[in-house]
Length: 118
Image (cartoon, rainbow, N blue to C red; front, side, top):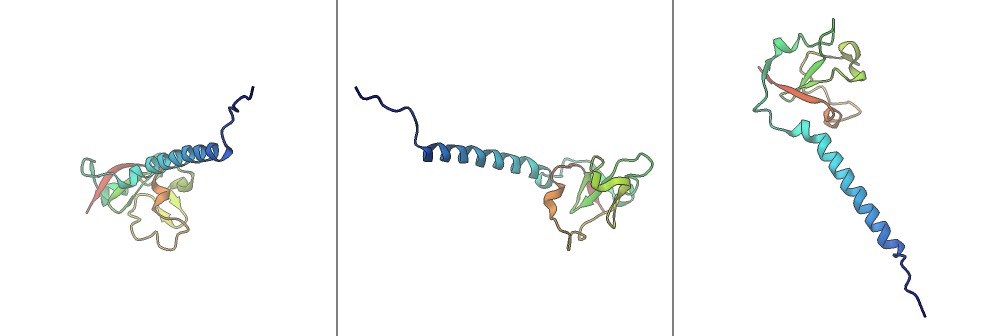
């Protein structure tokens, strides 16, 4: 009596694995970009003058602004002592991304804590 094999074709298994990986990557991408795209209407406001005190010096948190959003990068090793290359914390970095080896996607892990007002 012939028995039916319980093995699925390799191609079908591979398609299933790729689909799961694609869903995981899409979920991670969405989660990472949530902070850079969420509405800032409900966030507290902070002026440029107020932002200056969050410069990462003397125990202060490390914030910077970009396109109206103020990011808390205190946990970032790239902003140690309030400086990232020639960019200083406590400032508006809008327009300073040109020429950088990265784009806005590097802000995604950081929480938006306020909106910048003129």
